[in-house]
Length: 128
Image (cartoon, rainbow, N blue to C red; front, side):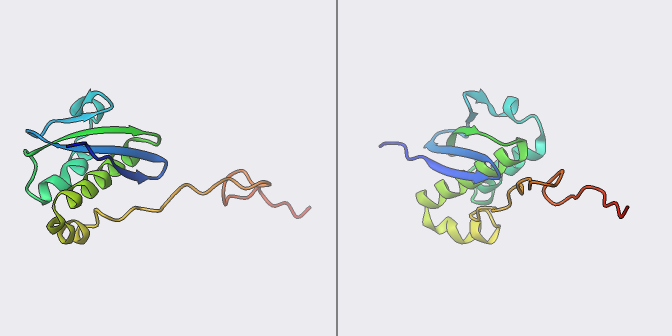
């Protein structure tokens, strides 16, 4: 069986996720899960689709993620894992969808405009 790659995105982060039958090992960019994400909140966010579907110890997760920061990468991985789980078993779709894990969060940083110091901030107005 060939491994299928599932893509998850958030802000400027892109995660390519592969789910294989295994014992629950998570590898991110050829590094251990705990070393790549030292914050417990990020690790729980990534594993939440597996916990929700009661498949935490049954799949190995291999991830290649790039761009963005810690939160964006964690949420991109979460979306990729959720999409992979739905492909494996379509019955997980309702559970993951109700938790909001199948929705791609479209919020991005607004670009800086010319004539302004930031996206919406303006220089101080002087009447005289």
